[in-house]
Length: 311
Image (cartoon, rainbow, N blue to C red; front, top):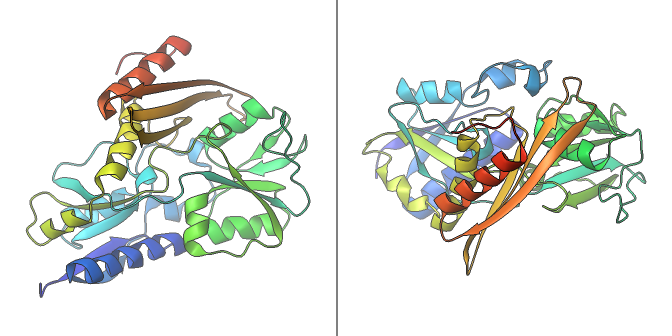
């Protein structure tokens, strides 16, 4: 194929890693050449406001999607957890090629973490934890009510630098991003949090390749799609859609495939305005397919949380 595709991406270290990773797959697996175009999003421009205080959706995706619709780029690469469940007219996710570790990673000042059975996060009371995710804050506060949550923004290296500079005692990040960037963490305590402690965001660790509907240039990219990964993350994102949520919804969930079908674990938090206290409802379901699993978890959450209404 002689055409060189234009691949749109954000300019963060992680976004560029993902873009170059997909560009390599295009070349090695499909023989398709590409060039990378950096596009700045609203989420990149606004760094002094916690996500929970920002209005709207698509903080890291809208400008990329606009570039697709305007034909300035031919495909864009997203972290799937950033992508709203509603696709703009004229666009589609043509491939979800992979999912690496979906877990959350706790990083702390050296010598601080001391996990014990009744304190699985291992943080001492009063520790200052950096995160702008209500999902992470809700699950943390439900486990450790004495933890102080402090807003944390910036790309992955910037967040880790803020921890090293003493602005926080600990921070929470997606293990996938830290692993992809191969960041040296030898001077920090690290703890990968099990799903029983911290459920990830829907789609965390997965990539999404988005293109224009029916574009003949990008149709071959469908060959990069991983059916099992897509089935699991679709289950998670369908639960998010049923709950009517976006980036601000304190929802954690994880779907896995086994012999009985799809197992979906989910947790929904409720956090006070000052992010100082929280409650969570945790549910799980096993079902033969994605739709039944997400429906079962939705109904279980609706039974546990009176404020949830129908989809």
